[in-house]
Length: 150
Image (tube, rainbow, N blue to C red):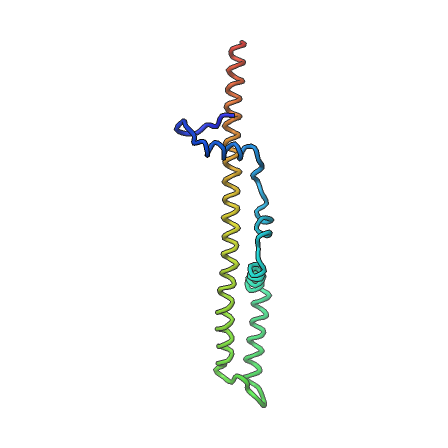
């Protein structure tokens, strides 16, 4: 099969790449590929990001805050964190300081998955384009053969 290319001449390395592309299956399940490479830390970051971005987390968090404030505001005996709730502020700051980088790790992994998906889409599209150009060439040859016979 000849590989059409703009400008006429194709580099031998590029020709080999095109021929390999045409002769092999390039479509892949990107999610499965990514899941094979995922580390324990990345999996944990995904779980934290999934939970921290859910309504369950928001409602549970609001409930804990409400209980904390209520217990410390109306405690009869001991206030472990009296108003203005400095310990609560410290815990919230620590939560934010830990949670933000973990969520960013998860987003970075998602970005890597998107890059892998884009590369795979490019290869599939390139193969489809090459095969379509080849089919157009074959159709033109068949048309020419029919016109010669007629």
